[in-house]
Image 1 (cartoon, rainbow, N blue to C red):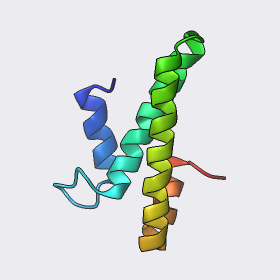
Image 2: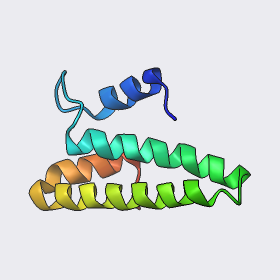
Image 3: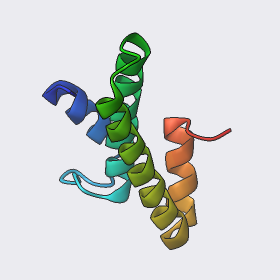
Length: 88
C-alpha cells in the first residue's frame, strides 16, 4: 500500500502536465512502485499466494500499458523506460 506522499512524488516525476493523474506514464509508474513494494513483501512472506497472484496481475497490467504506449508514441515510451529503469 502506497502512502499519499509517495503517490504524489511518483506522479510529479512522470506527469505530462500539472493535473495529470491518469495518463499511461503515470499508471505505469504507479504500478511499478506497487510492484516493488509487493516484491519486498513476498520475499519476506514466501507462502502468501494471494498477494503473488495480485503481483502477477499488476505485472500484466503494466505490460499492457507499456505495449499501448509503445504503439501510440515511441518517444514517450523510451523516455518513460529510461526514467523508471525498466529495461536494459
